[in-house]
Length: 315
Image (cartoon, rainbow, N blue to C red; front, side):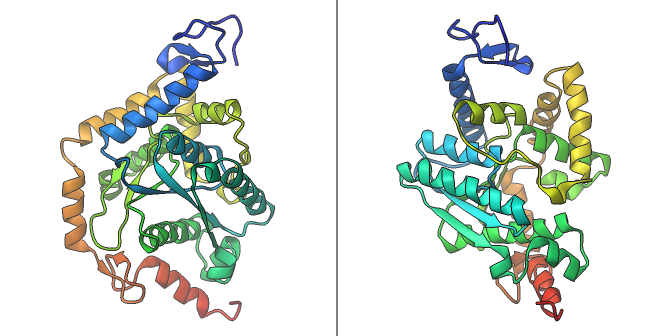
């Protein structure tokens, strides 16, 4: 929050200053700015049309709830998907925030909420599953969420699966991929991935032009209640370190994250396109022998994980 500064657009009292844009906005103009940034992301990356059915992965955090709110207000047919990870009080609080938003906001637009409960469907919560299969918790969580996001989108006939990844998320991910020169991941670092083969839903990240701070402000100004705490399982994750490094750079030079990630998209757009990605996928992917979802191996990583878990007497 700032004092004695007027809105760059309407000249009334500002509510928020955005150093990377050399601007300040009142609530109404800030909302217009946020909606415009998402609209530009959708249009420039050709993410979807007004006729498409969208499914948003909502976690109870600021980004995903803001995304659902924004897409509904922009006039898109958007439902939500919440994956309950079974992480004690954190998951309970997250579920409450998602259900509250669904009932008080989304329902007014005719939107519905789908819920997948991991400890009921997979047989145990994320923490327990990770112990059973002897894998890092975040890795286990990622495998399950990616599978269930895609499975729900295909099962319920949605055209596009949207996630709340913001500029901070994508810049941190890019930094990690560049530091380790993970070429395969860099190829798919863009905010829009095509539905390359049968069984894969199109995946998009409409918030890539907005920062965590801007999305938190959007939620506060629009009275969207969200979970403030980080997932307790994410402690020590390298992504948090990369975010810290980028935040220090951003403080010294506002706009660093934007230049880093947007610059990457501009440069990589000449070599990797949705069409070329789709062609590579079609040549390397085939249906999982167990569930039918696309995979590069005979059995997908989710089915391998669940098969390993089921061999334990704990399940």
